[in-house]
Image 1 (cartoon, rainbow, N blue to C red):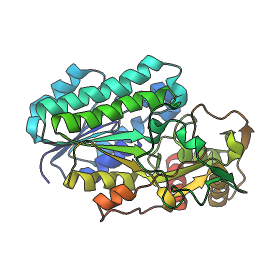
Image 2 (cartoon, helix red, strand yellow):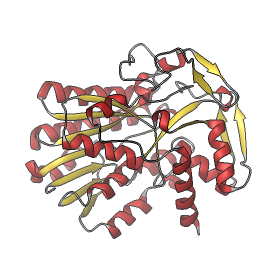
Image 3 (tube, one colour):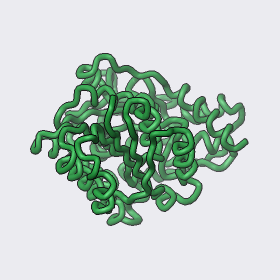
Image 4 (tube, rainbow, N blue to C red):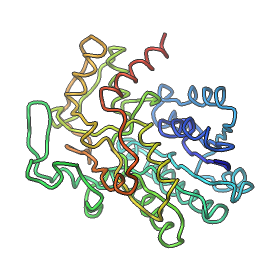
Length: 355
């Protein structure tokens, strides 16, 4: 496929996976990433190593260290390509609901204003392109915590009689009148704007509300990157803190490659302002306690962790994404990697990096 693919957050987990996936499908991949992850979470979370790796290995990759809040700089790089831009994958974000409370204006301007800037570039310069936005299940706020949940030995689970038991939570759940965290609110603003540009202006836009997005390319840190940071602690022996819910909170985990493959299917037959829940679903999920047990088995050593009664504000007790809507629209797509596969890959990648 000829043309230009633009990827924001190109050195992050989903962005870098997208660069590697789409490099063979486009003439050029333009990456936008200014390593703000290091500002958010410290030098240990820096993505500079990934930027250098992509530049070294992918000949048709072009990197630009631009802040997505700077529309003028974005236009300077992207406007000259015009209609040659066929796909924009927007993954750049402030991704932590804990961090957002420290600097609400930074969080909102990165997540909401930055997204608006990219939508304007789409509308003005490449209106036939596909625009893909990585949203989050945090747009639903803490509404999932009021579902009828049942406690088992290792996890919280939804009551078997509930409609969500078989497949998980679908896109019909309200995003209104709920505690989102400030991060969730900034992502709601961006999420709704992406829908609006699709429906109001007739542009090809897709919103993917991620569960836990994970994989071996994650620069995991305490405030963001659950499985990656957990495995990092399992390997190094650093203390891990489990926050609330008896360590039985459940997350579905989707491998970054599986999510990017969703983007590829969407791009081949895009829709206007469509919304999908995108996670591991019933295929790939675990509780915190179950994840710790898996890490101990893979590393063959006990984890150093402590328990805090204080859960994170707006955190979900149980979340499993229903991906059946996406599967109905794109029946050739399916999950490839489950939680154990993902943790094993993270273990291998991290071990290789520290040798």
